[in-house]
Length: 168
Ligand SMILES: [Zn+2]
Image (cartoon, rainbow, N blue to C red; front, side, top):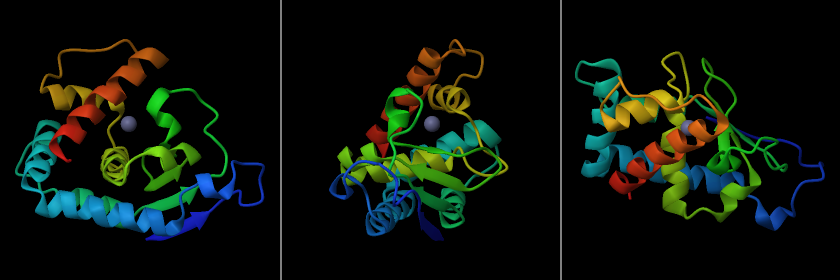
């Protein structure tokens, strides 16, 4: 696992409002604990995986995605306005990369860890988008939300809230 500091000389927010590499390591530790030892969280994550991929999934696969990820700390706020995506976002499907934006600093440690689990579903060759994750969370792939910024925001925040409820 790599943690890269980006834009350290940029005109970002003051240092004290940003997360550090140590904060990310702490978030990853919490995320791993939730995925392996928090039975309610583990059951929910495995239900999501079953809805998405079938078979008998293990939450360990999500731990492995986090272990393979590169985390980029940005000193700049995200340049898009997708609500809670202000906190952080993956840089693309097919890769294991997460950019963490300054506003992640305002999240509780638990919510930050849940956010890392959220992003893990967007990583790697089997990455799913927020619309697919919302369908998997509801347990119905025949329903849809409009593919607009508002629809995306709703999909993301809805399935994230369910994830938070199970992974507190
Ligand atoms: Zn998302």
